[in-house]
Length: 61
Image (cartoon, rainbow, N blue to C red):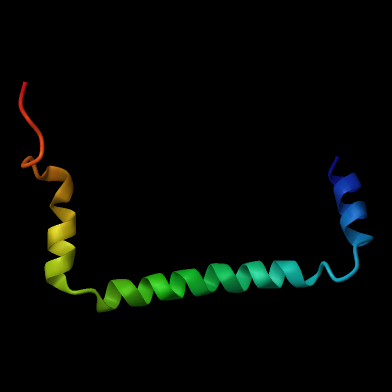
């Protein structure tokens, strides 16, 4: 099955650019995510981290 896919992909012209584009998108996403984490305000991080434990909007049975 893999031979069929590989042979079919080799017959498509210009397909060699797609792995490079996907690598750039992947790398860019994590660089931007890393930058956001480094520059995020501590107050915001503390507020968001306590959201799952906040019981103000739930009612007890």
